[in-house]
Length: 69
Image (cartoon, rainbow, N blue to C red; front, side):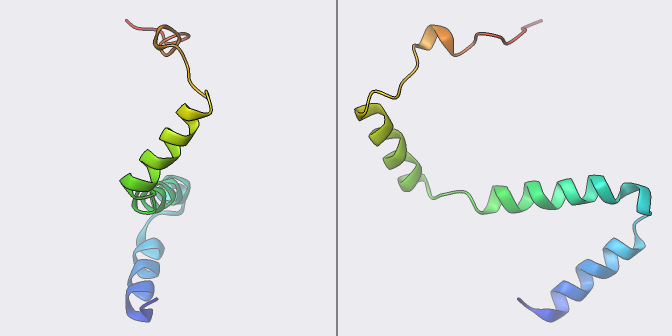
């Protein structure tokens, strides 16, 4: 990790009013999760293996319990 970047991030956190830290933390976690997703090939491979094992859902059930307005 580049120390200068870390320090700049921490400076920005300190400049942010404390009552917004929970939202900032959630943004950081969401960002990290988004950039650390598996590559598409690995994701496809996993999905293919699940399908071959019969771990599937009928398309009619995919929208159950979703309230559309």
